[in-house]
Every structure is written in structure tokens, then in C-alpha cells.
Image (tube, rainbow, N blue to C red; front, side, top):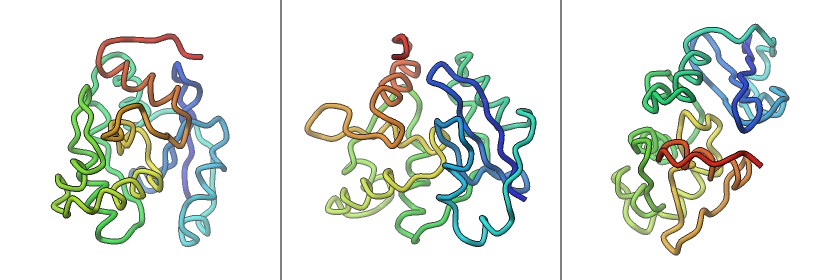
Length: 170
């Protein structure tokens, strides 16, 4: 069974979906089914149950919101993908809070050629475990925030939170 929890954040509810203590999806939505339908068919076959918000992942979110910006790093995660995508997701987890990288820098950190920036963008777009796999820390080299699955205001808030420059949610 996939266990779903909702944790309140300044940007709205954060749905956490886990299986046997490993986070398989997380996203800024009040409806866990929005995350559940993005899982593999094998995981969906296990079913979904909404449970009380407690446990290591919810405590990590609370600690992160209270200023322990490394709290999310200790939570085990698992998501599907090619070996290249898995390398990129692993490299994303190494990008420290308060810093950002470009897609090309992410590709280089994953040991991929600079021409793999497009693959880095795809890995960010397909990331199922935000903000634990912090794709919000990747910015286009040409400037701006780029896109974010949960909207640019959420990305802006996360980056401001991590840099100590809090902004009011919209």
C-alpha cells in the first residue's frame, strides 16, 4: 500500500507518498491522487491510503520549513527512470540548499557531457519527488526561473526560503 500524507506549508499542502518508509512521490498539491497517477503501474496496483501526517518525511518537511535546510536530504527516495535520469536525480540531491545550478552544470555534475543539458531539463520535468529531489534549484543559464511543475511562484518561494530572503506566498 502507498501511504499518503499531507503536510501544510506556506505554499499550500505538500503531498508525500511513501512505500515501506521510502518516498516515491511528493508534490505541492492537496490531492494525493494527483501524485499517485504519476507513479508506475506496479506502484499504482498497490493502492493508495491517506494516513495521518507523521513520520520521518513529515518531520523533515517541518524541520526544513523551520530553517534546517538539509533536513530533506536524509529521507530515502526512489523513482523510476533510465540510468541517465537516475544519475541526474542523484546529482540533484547533491545541489545544496541556498545554491543553484544550470541544466548544463547539473549534467556535468552527473558525469554527463555538456550536451546533456536537455536530458537534465527532462529529468527535472519528470521529477516525482519535489522538493526532496530539488529540481527547483536548477535555473536556465540564460536567466530567469524557467518552469516548475508546481508553478514559478512555488519555485521562487523555495529559493527565497533557502537563501534566507523570505517572500510572502501569492
